[in-house]
Length: 354
Image 1: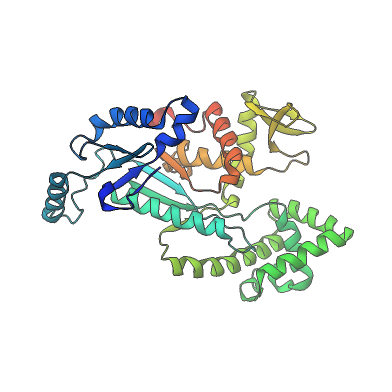
Image 2: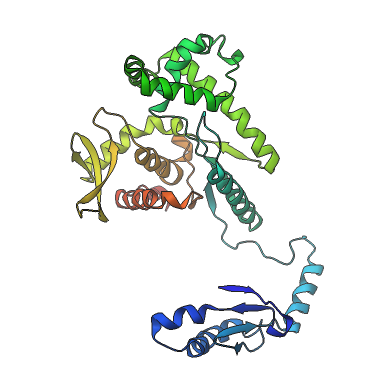
């Protein structure tokens, strides 16, 4: 790890990587430090003084005064106010996927972290000369909405009419979600209606869609308060529901390629290197036994839309690069999704764009 030096006599920065490497390499820390310096020397020659090894194996780094003075002069003379930082010579179209809260739920620290880091990355990329599309992949689709819509049907019936839904005050959405979940857990009849409600919503039932839109609108108002506080601008909502029309084609193409196969009544993709704890292959479900779709299906459709689909024909992004700013807890999910997308060719631009 490289850190700011604790004392001026140690230089400007210190690196303690040699201590951690020594044991795994079976060497002395100072020996490792010497090898690190040997590798750094051609890289830092014009920037740093000769690195020093201190104590058990610390590497002290000090900027050359000539480098600092030259850099300050270039910054001061830059007429474009860019601090002498050049723009990218080969600018790209980059999609940054961040924030991604869930409708009718509070934004937790993971969403806040993603929002701040994602916006920062977007600003840096734009400053570097790239074209950036900020996308908010909100959780606005799925089985929980059948439960929520059916709860609204009895508690807020005006929310099921397009004419009155926009005027309904849903109050505390978190409490509304908890109340709906309690009914789902305690009332078998309500549970059946909720599951049927998912089918109604996904098939375009007008009442269900009106209630769903009420939930989305109320959630947006709450999220926007946080975005305004953080100064987040230009973040375009592109929720899970947006990709619903593309899911069927994803399944059809994965099946035709032999990537999606039947598995206990569902459709799944099995990828090399992913197993359960008992050693059996770990499936990545893309279609449930009842015909519904999974998060992986939506994420695959999103990759295809962002990279491969034509902007003129179907409104695709035609991005050169896509960045996902998500919680580390989702790392395996995205590793599997990215692997499947690569195998299916969804992450490659179409031949017309090469």
